[in-house]
Amino acid sequence: MEIKVTDDPVVAIVGVTGAVGAEFMATMDRRGFRVGRLKALASPRSAGKTLRFRGREIVIEELTETSFDGVDIALFSAVAACPASSRLSRSTRGPWSSTIRQPSGWIATCRW
Image (cartoon, rainbow, N blue to C red; front, side):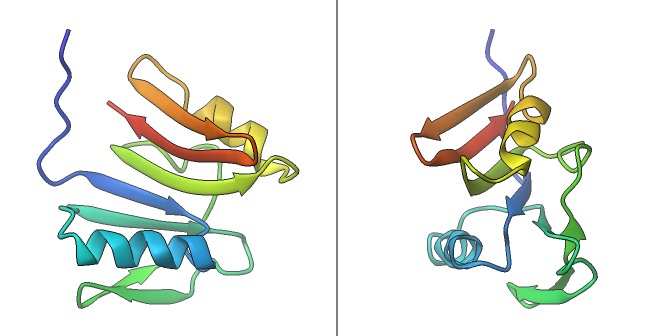
């Protein structure tokens, strides 16, 4: 069975205020990656702050177990020691998700 992701997916970036999150945004912009809506996720310390992406102001949200509801593609890099890693790995698993993992942590998850 083939599942098609929308042409304008909802993309979540976890750790959007860090170096990896900034690189995800820069790479998506540089490559013209289609984004219907960007969901910026970070720690409670960054929640409520804003950042700019493609001329729009995006409000950063706190990462929670329900952060991926309605998300088509989630990008993140979290070290294995990070307490959120196991919670993220559980919350992003579902019938239409796949997670790419490297030894240092979870890198990218696509929910189809």
